[in-house]
Length: 322
Image (cartoon, rainbow, N blue to C red; front, side, top):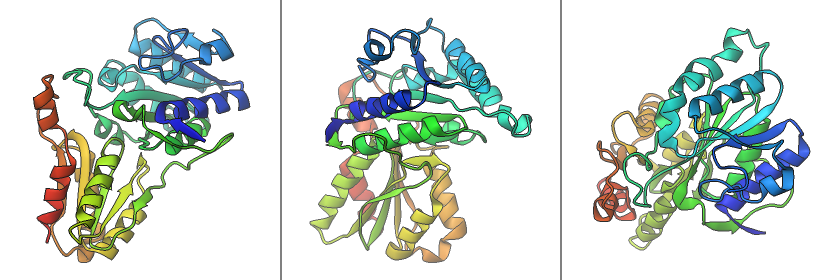
């Protein structure tokens, strides 16, 4: 059935809450208000205040309580209203959630999900528009998923909730209204599996989250110029599906990595390093990255548009490889 990305994520959460009474949602304005962007509208009316919990405005408390609840056997899903606010709760993520299972020799499980919106495009300025996924891929013990399509939004939410490790589930704000076909009932997309969204033979374009539609649009433009681009949606950053990337590069011989985060220290650098290390002989050209520049996200519409990676920038980067 047709659903928006937000509806699909909510449906995945709803199905898991019905399936497992230990699953609950907590965060700022997730109750009667239905979430900052309406992503969880209706769940409070369906499940009540015992399982849809409005919290104080304290990201530290939101994540800290989830760590304790998960260690005690529950499966909390907590919302941080904007990814930009994750810095407030970094000790709970970096030193508690990520480490607890390891430090207790595997005797403690941490089945918790942190949902958070990312990305620019709304003119929400530098403190409400960032893509900070690279910060969390650097932390052992944390899984990071970033769905780009409604079906994956539902399936990865189910997989994240069922996982016994902390999972950061990042939803791009500009994708929330995108519609697509979504399976009804229980539906799980395994964490750690990328998807080939468009087959091709001349160049591989690797993208995730809000950059996948732009990569697909660029591939369509390139097809009109007789360049066949294969588009890979990573869906999960950690664990990373290296085999999918290397298999594609082995077929095309060229690689362009697209992400909305800043260039320096972005996850694209990690992918480039892996391919240089494990697939150097597969390459017929240098690896290119299309990213945002190393500046804060601008507020002014014209500057934000110039800041964000675009279809045109992806097309230009691909052509530089031929």
